[in-house]
Image 1 (cartoon, protein in one colour):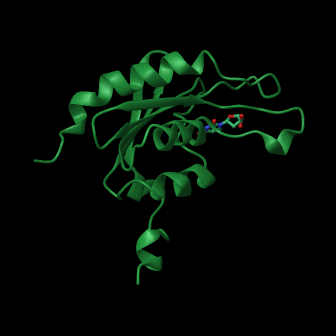
Image 2 (cartoon, protein in one colour; image 1 turned 180 degrees about the vertical axis):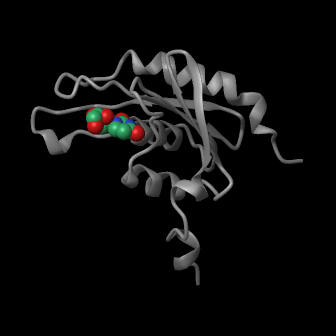
Length: 138
Ligand code: THU
């Protein structure tokens, strides 16, 4: 039976919120936390990591995906992002593509702030007609 990821939403949003505190964002001061749910129900979290050589920084979603891969995770079933901004913060274009490597079009992407959930999308909505691993399949 496939997992009902809705039951993991609160835990995923909480993980994204908690890891956001550890963001290394001294240049933009825009702290972001992200959490991804893997196929075994495990949560992997990551924060943005900026660099004095500005282009060398990377996003919270990228950190969360690296944690998933390091732990042996293979699939992303749901994503939560936590940041503080006027509009709900969704993954940047590059991170949408990185998520696409591990997630299907119907994967929920939950955008939260410190008060909780603000917006829900699917990855397919955020990255329609995407290029993905299936294009390279023989
Ligand atoms: N950032 C993320 O970590 N994730 C997003 O979804 C949007 C942007 C980071 C990159 C940079 O460190 C800071 O936010 C400002 O762009």
